Length: 311
Image (cartoon, rainbow, N blue to C red; front, top):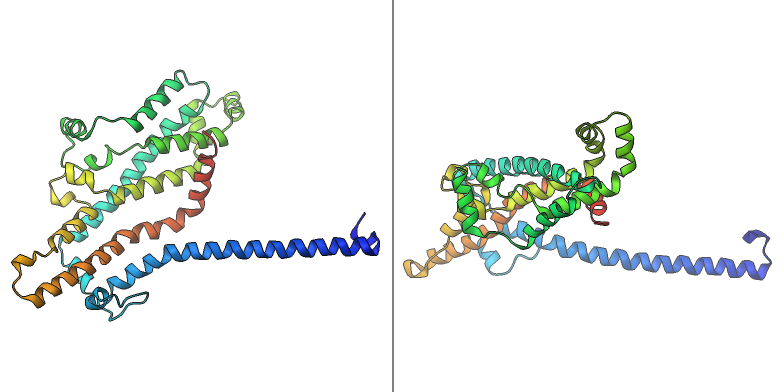
């Protein structure tokens, strides 16, 4: 019976409960939006502050006068960075490492995860156990360095790409995605139609796997972009250094030893510039990921959610 056919008293009760529910929903939504707003502020404020501090007067930053907007606009810190000759070549190296490393790692991850997601793979449990074992135990830095050396990879771009070319956690997420989105019935239907395993993977699996491919590309690219430790170990040729290593060198070279500085005013100026360099280096390092993320965000969220539902 609809609300229009109810007796007057019951109609008033139904309308009252509906209004009460609506008010409760509004209060809940207000609380949710307030919490999300505070969370966004907690994330955005450090980014805005770092950007403002990087273009503010060094003395104003040191005095704590910069809260949100730039004070005494200046680009001295960025000029000091770009006066460093290796900055352009290192930026290109980092882009190369991020793109090539993400592509190689994503291909290897897909090729490893898809067979592990199928029930008919012999020894699947043993293979998966071997993968998981490497998450808890590894040979250590010296054996890894010896392996890279014996393979002839030292002072080559492959020394940055190959040693970190596969992340077991990404394999687990990708395998779970395949298990959820590619049912066995679809595989059997492909075999009935005459598809080989490779043909099914190329024509069916990959077109349905755009979200998880985007997830892997983003994870690996960001990891390569932020990485500097492998370059410090495996590279001595400065022409192959990634951006993070060069930025680290700039920051180290900008450090001031007070015992070596007799001019107090010059010492204070150098210390202030060093503080501002930290902010400008952070800005330069975070710009490329911020530019890339919006284009893959939709696929990233979907792939990460589906890939982590069950395992």
